Image (cartoon, rainbow, N blue to C red):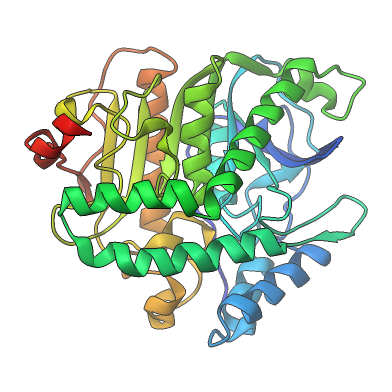
Length: 382
């Protein structure tokens, strides 16, 4: 079996990891740790089984033993159930993507923990898969599957629209009127906010243990990938405790921020695309002011595809898995490090409030130009 090596964290702290179940919330938490314990495999037992079953279901052409089985065998750089370093620490509430899993960004969240952040990744029940602490398994359910089928059909009509902003506006209007994914995104947003509520009420003798005093919710960021990225933007906008949002290649699928100014700074990191039209260019700012806010940052990564914003970017020979795997030509370790560096720089500036510094662009990271939306006369009658 080929070996998979996860990037080593660059921060000054060890990273701990533990699973927490609090009522209906199932979470995996990464945090600055006070001690090391021992290396652990990326996925073992029921978690490994779920990952291989996902491969067979979603990527039947992949040879599991040399792709996701290799990832499952990789040693992480976090330490299971290590004691938490005294806080409080800036806190991130994270959501996985549709039909993915809470540990899908282990490398990224370990990196953030090594720099002093607590990152709480929640299972979106019915929308992803995970093993509970007792070994029982949870998986995707019919509402997600139906919503995905409906959305993919709609996207087939959306993609040819290019930069026809009037036609794209009409597409979104129909989505919000009839799309099956709309109530799902609302549920995902609310579950992320429920995590913050649980952290706010946590006590040392409860499920979070010593993490109850480790989280600083005055420095709260909502973050997610794909559908989770959309939910993260919505949660940060709706929850007054949110200070910022980070969206990893998520299309915004709700009307709350369509041509409207976001309440908080937002970092959007996106796959490569051709032309000037991008699905984020109608969101987060008023149409006539699109692209003028310095704290709304949209970045595309050259040669990256959708799943390159997860640990799946680290799969061996991923370039040979093809477009069907939603993995691009970009080097897996490079894109993982790039996403970590961009996220840390953004949080350092807009959550920690440190001296402004330029984001680490270059190395394939490029700002997305949305100035064409400001010139769109159709927004005057929208």
